[in-house]
Amino acid sequence: MTMKKKSIGFYLAAVTCVLAVVTLILLLIYGSRGGIVQGTVYAALAVAIICEAAALLGEKPWTDFTSIIGAVALAYVCMTVFSDGIWNIAEALNGIKMVGLPELAGMNYTLAGVNIAAIIMAIAASFTKKSKA
Image (cartoon, rainbow, N blue to C red; front, side, top):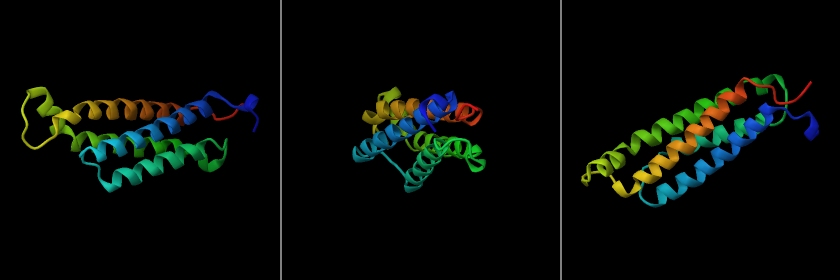
């Protein structure tokens, strides 16, 4: 498939794939600083990256669902990381320190922003063709 035959869906899937990789890098940094990251989050993120990369292969019968599966996996990642980091945010907002790490609240916001952007791109890619004609 040449570049002239690529459609907007291809580029949306590519941006989603890049944002998912950025999310992975941010999660590795977040985890190294003491943030809670479950193993299932890394697994779901790997599924999302693989699904979005598969969507880049063009119009195949099985690629119709890869962006949808990728969006669901990204939503799981976002929900789980946000849920596990809610104490960081609450303590940063209240100016207290109890069970969370308020210094990681900024990372939680960044992770949520990048991840939500990836989810939106994955949803948009689900409804668009990946190649022209």
